[in-house]
Length: 527
Image 1 (cartoon, rainbow, N blue to C red):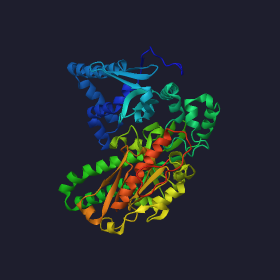
Image 2: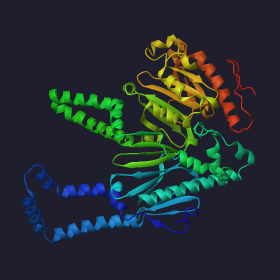
Image 3: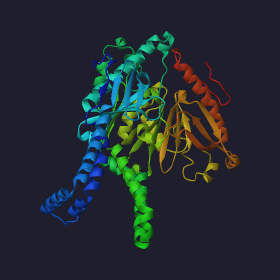
Image 4: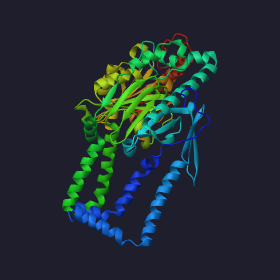
């Protein structure tokens, strides 16, 4: 299929081994159920190779005609079902969409419009990886989860199709941008992480993507700069970070509890703690599997992430949809100096199934943090903040770095971290800090805040305190500051409303920008 003109006529089938890659685990369970006695005898040492051969021969010769017919029927039904599943799974690529049809008894027909596709993830489960197959998962704006799955293609075919579709998506967006009004095209809205700090001319990559003729060397330059990964995580760091994090601590607590119950109340311990241990083991493995072999690379389309042990995934995160960036550091991660970076992104909800999509860096060093932040946070020269000040703000407390912090009256509610609860502003960014055992720092561009709310109940009002909550896109990144002085929250609401309005106006205006001059009594920005 030509890379520039998608096939608009031909329906194609997936790889013939796709049913095996999808249902291999069920096949293994069925075979184990049939030969369980033989397997148990082997593990218990009750039989050797010669005895096993004799037992198999005796079992086969003992089957009568009816049993053979039943066994043959089961095999035909299974193989026939797999064949029908493959035969009726087809896909086609048109000029503006991808369609997948599945099912022969209950049919489904799904379509993903290319102009709504945010990213296309390459996913290789364990068995698909062994046979060289890969799945394409299409993340569509505001769908919450992958809207369309294409299972399975040869890995190189999946990679080629992904590149073709992403290229066609960019062409469609360029055509839409070219057909827009000249002012809208020239003033295109700024977004956090859209290239600031990545290039001396922060909008060159975006302009080259929508108008390649504006800089014929931009693509070559971008390709050269994208060779090196910004961060990587090995299996060892993934395992240790999981054990030092919350999941590992809970696993240790439950393990010790199960051992204690097993010694003193054996009739109860198995029923209570065995399911909990199995659940936590699954959680530990999931965390390790998604963090190991992680690499993060900056591309023209955004951040490209690849990770996984038994199964691998490759996906691209569009920078233009990042609404907030969060940095956090659990207590025990302070020993090796590790950090986690998360994002709130438009098109992704807050469900746990999407947590890996909202994690920009599962665990990284301070150097990894310095490598990544310039690509997602505006630097101080552009009205933002540099990486060293961000790290200092994350690890510090009190009014250093320009923070407005909670008053002493809040120590009754937050005896250990009341001096860490606070916020600071730059001309373009709002910094929200909190946490004691788990340090956290949230970075929200002014133009991404929709509103700021004041929350306080009877107890908070009695203490003269309130909580400030920013309304923005939901996700794991916290956008609220707890137990500030009520007057500080009201001042923050007034100033943030002015800054947000000013930032959105600047996004649609090419006039030289000057930061608004704010005083506590002003309710609107000055020109």
